[in-house]
Length: 110
Length: 115
Image (cartoon, rainbow over all chains, first blue to last red; front, top):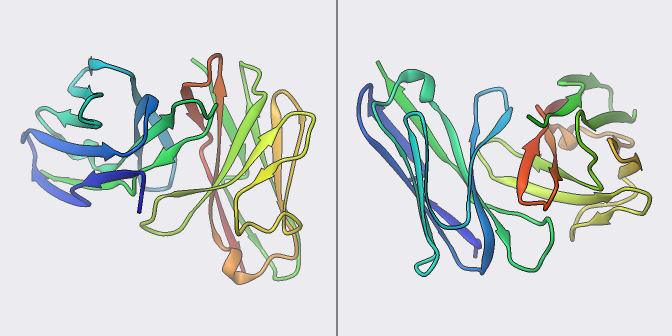
């Protein structure tokens, strides 16, 4: 069983649509990360959350610590948003270790 | 912001040879770096934790004699795939944390193809 579960695994959207990707985890954490991996492999850290909500441009990330759940929202989606989005958590009391979700592959069609 | 650089981005080698991949933190000191392997359409799999000045900690099932990790300085960790086989072909990526360790910075990744 994965400590971090993401849904959906695959998502296709029309340009302009509002997109939500969900992440649930089963361990106590000190932080949750949303990562973006483009074709070719490079990974970029989008957000690090320990509570509440963060916004960067068209991206919004929320976390509910009590429910062990986080969501990543993309408003006004664009084809350049097509990528794999990965949820990762830093478990509490384990230093720099991370647990990763399997990722959500997003394709935005023009 | 902080950057982690990985080199080479792509490498092709013959079976039986060894390949070294470098991971550098460019503007911060990383006492700990992580090496991951990723199979197509799969999640990142932690291979080992690289600690500056000491031996790496390997995850269960990862052969330490095959995947040699050296973290000789606070800004450089290397992964050497020894006696490479075609099944070692994969995407390898490193990461490092600065400060409190809650911010992840990833290298660009290295595609290894063993022929």
